[in-house]
Image 1 (spheres, rainbow, N blue to C red):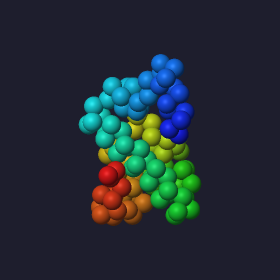
Image 2 (image 1 turned 90 degrees about the vertical axis):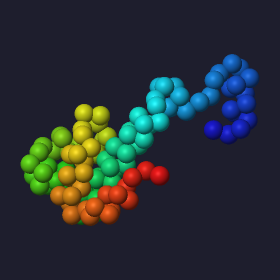
Image 3 (image 1 turned 90 degrees about the horizontal axis):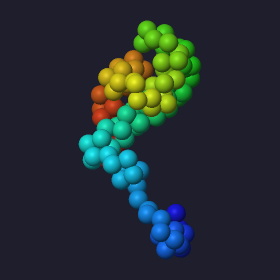
Image 4 (image 1 turned 60 degrees about the vertical axis):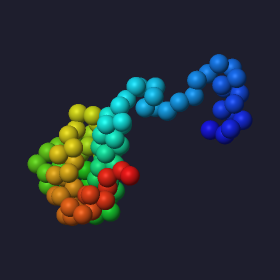
Length: 103
């Protein structure tokens, strides 16, 4: 948001803040969400770079296409361990997975 718009909104009584502040998330909760989203995004990019469909990946991890779609969408019901196991199934190294951690 540009500074002028920010100034006008605050002058009108609006409070400007971050999603973390609005949802009252702790630092740990924010970092956990960022980690899951990073792993999800990287999983999708890795799968696509290997020219695999969601169904192909689902077969590799003994799951369903809809579960892979949820994984790639960052669905909160998907565990971090499933995301990491799926990345390993795509031959992602431990070093590469570590590099996916948000900074």
